[in-house]
Image (cartoon, rainbow, N blue to C red; front, side):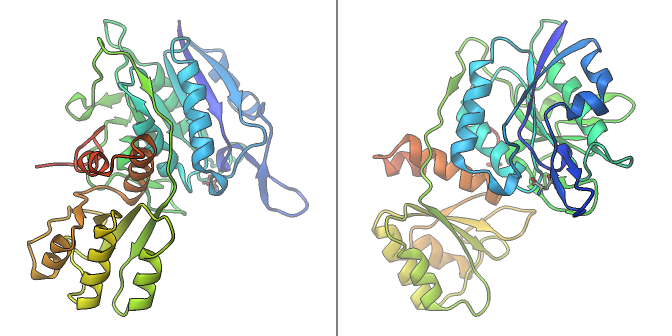
Length: 343
Ligand code: ASP
């Protein structure tokens, strides 16, 4: 018999409608047993743990990421896989962060949620939950996990967590992995794509690293952005790293003041990573004249990383290497767990 730990953190999937106000509010931890009782009586033994109180994912933060990571790590030998139910709004951030915190993960950690609460007739919760549990328990003939990665399962698709973005607040297909193929698709059968899955080294132990440095910021460029805005952002006291959201393949205005402000920041030791505002495609600095300035200012290219993964990766690397900015820079340019495509 396979054992799966189902951790409920909150989110729409585990909410009910308040009959007086009409607003969605957190239900109790017995909710899944009430609405999907067969999940707890099937071939897979599912055990429940729940956050108290439930957390709307807008209230998630790095301290809770780390608590969740410890909870999974402390139970890693006891279960074959893990399912985490989580609000969709910041699921891609939490799941990305955990993908970096677990080194050499040997078991599946599947995040899922829903666009409608589980008690609503048309809800997508049941299918997302049941299939996530099945994927978390799936093993090959040798008893190894089929997908030993942190993933998001939503609307029939299994994605690598650190490749996903919430793209839709209306449709059941809430998530998308723009720059990487799904790891599995659930139809009549669940079809896995081993060529896209990252496998751990079974001879090396799993490690957990949960130190986080939150002194990072996102600077989103737009036509008309002022010098004051850029300077105020780059001069935030103690700032350690910046996600610079640029145009197209990593382009920015050629204003002298922008170059100087960025150069001053990188000279001070602030790490600036160029991340394109386009969901599909990669940063390619030097392709256009409008990115040469950035290269010269010491800005690093972020390849095809998502904003969620880049923020989580920066916080994690700065937290784990507080006195070694060069190492942080080197690791930002490497794929640690499949979060970027390096041609
Ligand atoms: N506000 C909810 C949350 O992220 C939305 C959802 O779960 O879909 O927690």
